[in-house]
Image (cartoon, rainbow, N blue to C red):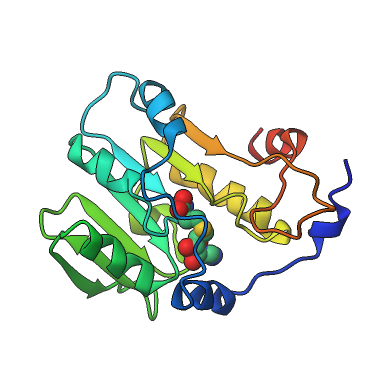
Length: 196
Ligand code: SAH
């Protein structure tokens, strides 16, 4: 199918912040995602005490699920409003601190210490800042990245995961000529070439 119509589209960080301000966040799923429940065993693979990464996390409730199971969750999100709503909607006390390596960035951490949300662009992160992860939940992330940034995003993600770690990716399938995105249509052939 023809994805040419979406290739040039760019959504700016400012536009994402506006979506949050206007409460234009139809992507947020109050009840969490059934596919994480379905594939939880694939992500955890019997292991405990994992570090799980949520790229472009919004206020995804699945972060609370995994933290409640004893894992350590790290997310990154440009909208400070989203991050604060996550903690307040789950009645989680948190503290905030600057991130010395990233100018203007803040890290919001639950007082219990097992949920750390970086408020900055994902492109500001590196494994020297956030370490490496044992698993990834990518829902509304690759498909929200601007098409021109996909390769950069995929390379960065691969640098942030430990070798052979499970990476759960949710995409959406539809005719890209009928909707401008996001979420963008990312064909399976492209996913294969991005992640190898
Ligand atoms: N994964 C979440 C949110 C999906 S919407 C969920 O499943 O609900 C995509 C989110 O990415 C938005 O909250 C937007 O503010 C954020 N975002 C967009 N570009 C970003 C970037 N470059 N770095 C970090 N967050 C970004």
